[in-house]
Image (cartoon, rainbow, N blue to C red; front, side, top):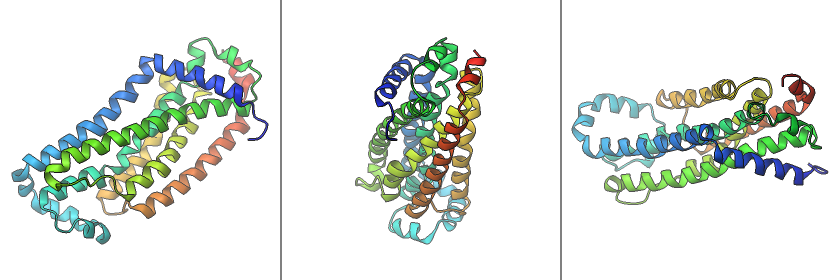
Length: 276
């Protein structure tokens, strides 16, 4: 990273962040999805646990079957909890953990989708490509913009989720119980890696397609592994604990490095100019 034009990189980042905050198409998904995932969902889990005792009792056999697929080390942490508190812990803390990763990935992908194709749609791409920044510096500016925004939103979302979960769960738990070690590692290690994966792939796509919607839709395929991880938890195939989170983070960071290297090697200003 030595010898890079950080002044020019920061200038591009400031311009892009200003565009992001002024665009409803970009800001609305960044607001609506976190509210749904981090406020409405835990509220529904809490209401179901607090007021749906009879309903849960009626589904006791299915609930026991689901708990039977949970790893022993997880069940040990939940000893002494009644069925309602157990349900809330299972849904809000354990099962929902992979879904939280959608927030930083989505934010990074939305902003990255706008990186080059948005410049083309606003008729500013030609001026950007004629700046004195090198290919590596230009890609760094675009990726760092998306990553910075994703990390800020991820941190704020985590704080919001912690407040909501502890508030909703207080009648059930009688104490502040969130976050746990898994969530902390996920927020500081795996979440940024997932955000970098989403933005890396989406920036590459954005430099090769014609519209924001096309870039965003193609970039959305990176959500599929998160959905698979959540299904694997319910099926008892994987345990979303500290070890798995650390290992997944390492794997994703390695993939990120490969994507960044590939992006630098294949970035072609002339090809972008030819599509203007």
